[in-house]
Length: 209
Image 1 (cartoon, rainbow, N blue to C red):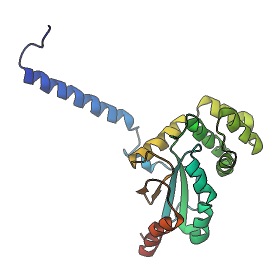
Image 2: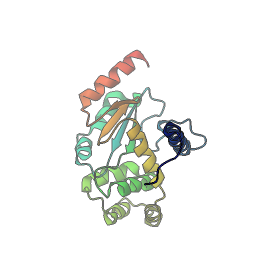
Image 3: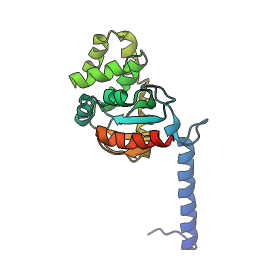
Image 4: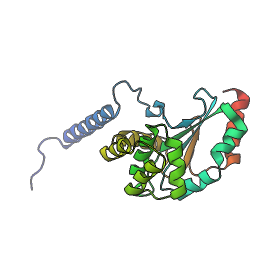
């Protein structure tokens, strides 16, 4: 049997140094130039309400998630708007973990956003609740989008990196299931009721922070 020659502890130290160097290199590659190291600072373009609002509620959702669909049909976004108006900024981010079609459906949402139709697409997906490729492309037709542009966007994987970035942000918050939420970056894993949301929003508005 072949053995390492020399002092065993020396080889252990060398091995640990090599492992540490690999890990440091991986982290360095993961942080792109110009980033602060916190990808959660990267803004989303799929929002409602003023970005300068004192409260930001972010939903991490999946178009193939039946619980997300139920949360949508409780009309919580409109209820938040009715209760708080311009004091709340609502953001959607992708966490496509439920079905094999979910990542491509998330990309389709970005492609619809390119034509300023994200929320219309969002609502139609949850109304139809079919997210195979043909269905996603049919929604673009129903919404009157430039279908050639939409299909090229979807087929080329133009927004795959954007979906992956949202996924990384979700994981940084410890989220593994949908829907999950943050309120001013405070994480809340799992579906949240309107009263629970209000219990998080109200103290922020009261304190002015």
